[in-house]
Image (cartoon, rainbow, N blue to C red; front, side, top):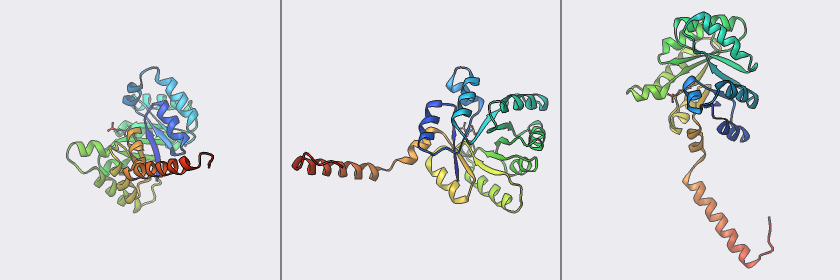
Amino acid sequence: MKIFLDTANLEAIRKFNDMGLLDGITTNPSLMFKEGGNPKDAMEEITKIIKGDVSLEVVSIEYSGMMEEGKRLRQYGDNVVVKVPMTPDGLKACKSFSSEGIPVNVTLIFSANQALLAAKAGAKYVSPFIGRLDDIGQDGMKLIQEIKEIFSNYNFGTQILVASVRHPVHVVDAAKIGADVVTLPPAVLDKMMLHPLTKIGLDNFLADWDKLKSGNPDIKI
Ligand code: E4P
């Protein structure tokens, strides 16, 4: 399963990229707003740091505006995936971009039918928002299961990008289902690294090493 980071924060992107964890990045207008500054600078920098797919989102709601914006976004790099909303115009733009060989991420997917239509329109990725479904009392992970089952019946070539991830259990569940990608807020990736027994074990190892050294101060690894 590929791991994308769901952020426009350059510090977080550099931090996890240096660990070799990142296969790509997803952004959206809200994440750009959160970072402040000129989003163009962030887009330029992110596409330089990350070799894998970087989803940059259009803000037009009409087909022609989406096409113009998508083409401008692609100037940041060949790894830019144009992110369009799951609307009739978004699907039309998805079809046009994908016919030109430009990869598309169809975002704001909340049903299996929406995922099916985005796949038919040639999307490289569909982004079902599982956390937002959980928030309204629906089972977001059940949607991932449904889409996985539907996609495995056909040869769409569209990848399931699990979005709106809230916690590490979402990640394990998505991996068990066989989702292609999860896009994670930095805080979730931080939590995935931690286990209390790892900390206790390391503290004990270091304490014992200090005891060993106190009898032999010249010892070094
Ligand atoms: C996906 O591409 C979106 O940027 C994101 O996962 C939305 O998550 P949220 O529901 O936490 O805003």
